[in-house]
Every structure is written in structure tokens, then in C-alpha cells.
Image (cartoon, rainbow, N blue to C red; front, side, top):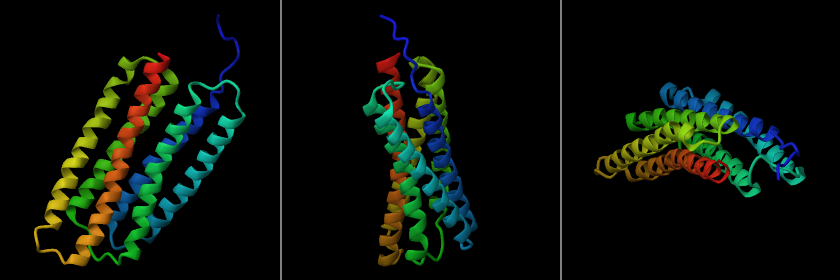
Length: 207
């Protein structure tokens, strides 16, 4: 039997809006790393993006509660929204720690990791945009492969950065600070892969 009831397409606007905020946060973090120590504007911009993303997250969850027919499973919508929001929250938490930790310089490997994060959020965002247009895994395949590739690149950069921290030349307090900062950016990059996995599952279930 054909379902003639319209499905709420506003969800796609909300998914895409959240993805844009994730990309914007990542770009501001990259600017923060490269413009250090002039970082106050970028921290504030990330904070603003986080607030806007929170508003979209709340709208999406409220709409989920009120909508009878959804584009796909409610559980998948809920998880997709929260996973994108988690990426943004991790970037915001990282940025706020720069003044808290009294960071005095930014390692080149951290700058490199911010570049990876930007690329990962862009690829993730592209995958989210594909969701509106297609339910074919073949049409999503290339962008998902890119998300996974960038997560692997992020792992390699993170391993190199942590290894350098523990070489013995870095003061113990700085080791603690930077281990925490690297963990946040690694988690944000991993979050992009998590979103990719959710999208893959959605397409497989609804294709």
C-alpha cells in the first residue's frame, strides 16, 4: 500500500543547518590556531555557532515529538541530530580551554589537526546534503569513503602529536594541557565518522 501522507521535509533543513554550524566551528578553530595569540574573536564566534546549533537541535527534537510522519526512523533522526551537535560541542569545549589553560603557543601538529577537522566536517556536511536527494548507497559511497579517510588521517596526526608530547622535552603541565586539547579535536573528527556511519545506516534501511 502506497503511503500518501506527506513526510516532513523540514528535518532536512535542520540537519543541513547543523552541519553548516559544524563546518563553521571547525573553520573558526583553524583560524584560532593560525592567528594565535589573537584568539578572542574566534572563541566568541565558536560560542555563537554553538548557541545557534543548540537552537536547531531543540527545534529538531521538538519537531520529532510533534510530527506524525517522519522522513525515516525517529531513532535515527534523534541520533543524527545529537551526533552533529556533539561535534560542535567538542569544538566549543576545546576553544574555551585555550584561555583557561593559559596556552602560550600552538604546536604545528595541532594546526595540522585543525585542517583535518575542517576537511572532515566539510565531507560530513556533503554527506548530510546527499541525504535529502538520494537513498542510494552508491551515490553516498564516495563522500563516506572520504569521511573515513580523514578520520584515519586524524588518527595518524593525533598519534604523532601524542608521541611528541611524551618524548620528554615537554613540561608535565603542558603535556596534560595538550593531551586534553588533542583529545577534544580527535573526538570531534571521530564524530564526523560517527555521522557518516549513521547516514550509511539510514540509507541502507530506507533505500
